[in-house]
Image (cartoon, rainbow, N blue to C red; front, side):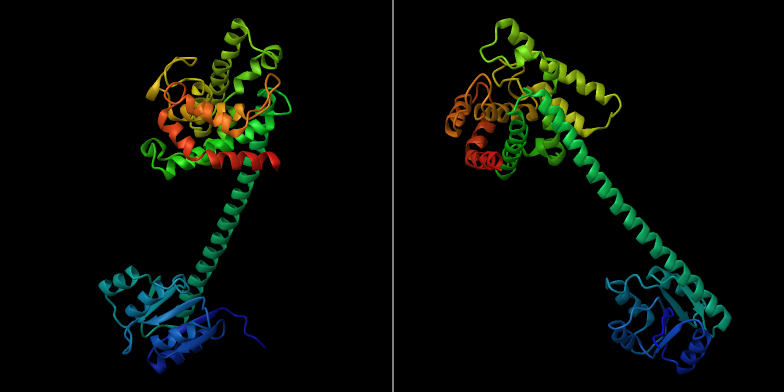
Length: 360
């Protein structure tokens, strides 16, 4: 019948100590007696004890040398080790504890004391493992729950963005393709080492998710303006431009409860600055050049590009190359020239990515 008791490995070059130790422990534990450290390592390839009782003073390899090997091996580093020694001095004990031993037992040892020490440390080790398993399971549950919440949050954001952005059948592609284009452009920036310092520390996943809210302020714009199938009047255009301020105000209200939300900080930058133009002709603040935050300059390009290749109630879709040419014509006027150069380099990837998304 298989022995299901906890296994204790007793390592000592003294046969008498092995016999006494085994007799003291064998009523409660399965005891494996080992005459040397090298033999211990051979057996550890087949057995994993709950605890190792390790003699310090052995001829082939000392206990101090052996524990270093144990602690440097990922398979054995977590096995608790109690030193057995005849050296009854604080320096020796401290040295052993520094090497990773959990306790010291002075030889000749008392059988009741040996049993109690072994019992205590095995119980502590089992509790540690249970706590570790619990923490790992808890962490897994937290990760799974967080992912579920993030997926739900993303769906809610997507639904809100779709409601806001034109409220028509083309909106879903706009939201997704804008995110795709932004991701492609940022990847191309990294590959070409452009604006490396400015992008250091960006959370790209959170950034792309927050980009869905760049036009959230359009929720306050009337359908008669937002869906007008023709050119807006001057008054209507002025009203349309207010969606930037409406969006910023909306996000700032959310920030009152989430002061440290990086997601909302990204979203506010996208909402606030994506209609600013490199030459200062944009809105709402008529900022120019490097005064426009980098996220705003990026969104300005991808938002226009995606709008050009998409059908709207007031215009047909342009083909990819025609849209690219318009962006290139805006280099140094509407758009950051460095980013336009990167856009040109990755334009084929943009075409492939947006086409695949539409076909999908």
